[in-house]
Amino acid sequence: MTTERLTVSLESGLAAAVSEAAAAKDPSVSLWLADAARSRLVTQGLSDVVADWEAVHGKLTETELAQARSELRH
Image 1: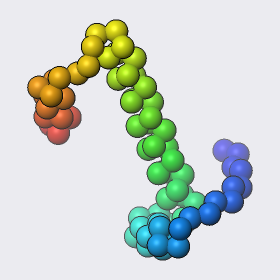
Image 2 (image 1 turned 90 degrees about the horizontal axis):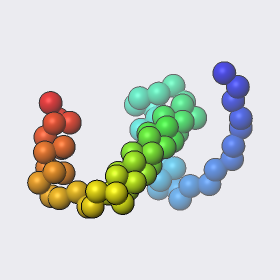
Image 3 (image 1 turned 135 degrees about the vertical axis):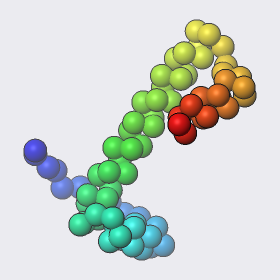
Image 4 (image 1 turned 30 degrees about the horizontal axis):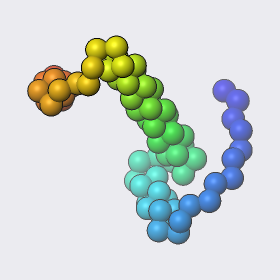
């Protein structure tokens, strides 16, 4: 796998929280941030799919959302 070095700036409190979370879960802040970025990209992709579906079929109802949440928990 090829990697690329990036420089990021975070608010100091957020940087401390990320460092603490990374220390508890991953061997490095870079791995923790990469995992967070992957999760964010998946979430954005799912949001895009839902938006496309709603554009064709109309907004999901609260009942449909509750049912989906229930099914995802099982």
